[in-house]
Image (cartoon, rainbow, N blue to C red; front, top):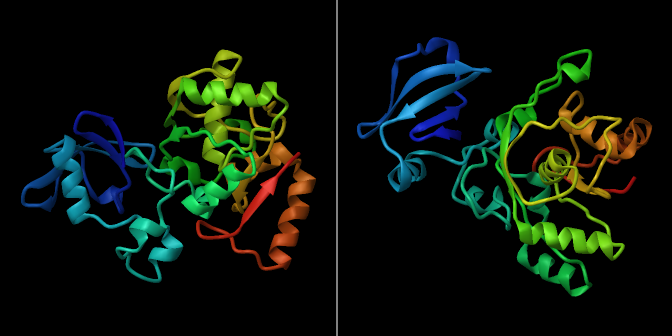
Length: 262
């Protein structure tokens, strides 16, 4: 779910067509919501509580929203609260883990720092729209769902210093890259930023911040495969993915990673 305003959240409901606007949904005798609208295939739910109490109900009644290819094989358990969470996570708001970051733990971060690599942080609340396929024949007509993000002045200063000293900026995950390029595109240069971004990166895009990318392997017809094609070029990406398929690399959230330099 993504918060729209006080007590109103955007949520995935299945099957949405069977619930009418104005209908009440009971999760518990003390925790309910009213369907106030349907937008872009998602439900807008107005809950009867907010703040700390709201999140306590979610923790007690909800389960970790695992990807369907995992959830179809087993129930979520307590281990998933750690396994399907990044070591960077600080703020509530994302509907899914930025899965490229799942490759890191604190020991690896310490090792990376020890060889002189600096690490900066951004916040982007991954939305459900990230995973929607691109259905338009003309990809320029594809509409990305907006996602909320933040870049601090400290992160901006660290990135600009690295650039000035001849270093490379390597975002971990497509979400981090999209946020950095959104901020740079909005202001003409990277600056501290917060707000919603619906940037769609596909071949022909001019990168202002990213010099490469660490990311997992993505599905055909997704906005994510188009993003990596924008970095590497379509032919190179086809060669990389042919290698990955031949060698039986793992795709999806718990899959293998790639480090891409154009």
